[in-house]
Amino acid sequence: MQRKREQTYLYITAFVSGLVSLGVELSASRLLAPYFGDSHPVWAAIIGLILLYLTAGYFIGGRWADRSPHPATLYSLAAWAGLLVGLVPFISRPVLALSVRGFAGLNLAVLLGPFLAVLLLFSAPVTLMGCVSPFVIRLLMARVEQAGNVAGRTYAISTAGSLLGTLLPVFLLVPTVGTRNTFVALSLLLMAVGMVGLARVAPRRALLHLWMPLLVLLLALTLHGQPIKPAEGVIYETESAYNYIQVVEEDGWRRLYLNEGQGIHSVYRPGQRRVGGTWDYFLIAPFFNPPPFTPDRVRSL
Image (cartoon, rainbow, N blue to C red; front, side):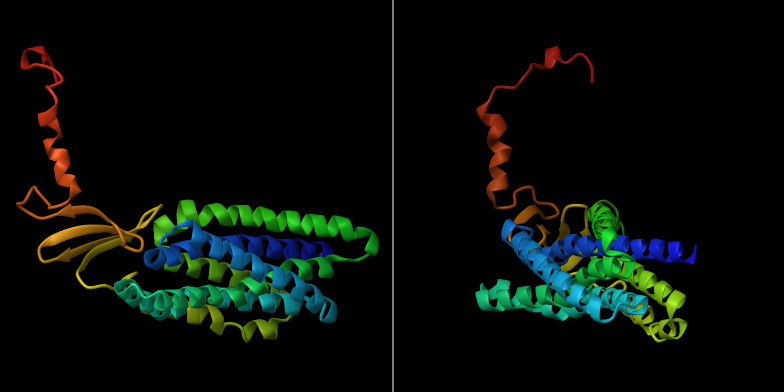
């Protein structure tokens, strides 16, 4: 019975690790969107490097599990991965601020540096999460004859978690609590799994990890209410299901920007109908066409 419970918890660990790894990947795009946009090159860089980190994790995790096939090692690894996930939005904040200068001066070097630096922040947590599945397989392996069944079941459960991790940030977490808190939620979930696992097999080691969630929560509370993307003249900002939205007021004009802000999506000035842009031409379109109907044909509204 005890062995069955241990196996079940190992599968839960694989499931949550898969969930968080894909959740981090989807959330990474929203972390970068206010500064670099949401284009195919950005997505290619995110997906490519996440796959690279997972590849490294699979390789390292297999060797690590053979050298130290202990559940406590796996759960400690999961807790550290969760901590590093939670630190990403806070460490990346000053780094991403540098990219604003790059856009202002159209300096490619200043733009590229923060972009790569932020993506490198994901290397440690994602690599550690890549270690989880090989570790789980090693701990579940009782006989060589079970290798195929154990490996297949572990990767199926992990992939099921990844499916949920793909949907949760996009349809629930980011639109509801924002990108920063999405990272915090994923971090706390993975740390909880790791620390509960440690409490089951090594209670004293679990106590030594209690500072991890406290640190992430403290950082989240410290930056609560802080702007997502600090800039002059910002009077409103939010995150929708699709974009980062920012309204900036300059010299009496209000402009709506999305994501990195390279395009103006709406312009408004109180008391003025014309805005001095291509939008004004839409106002003269009715003068080039006859009315669609005459007043006497209007019977009801």
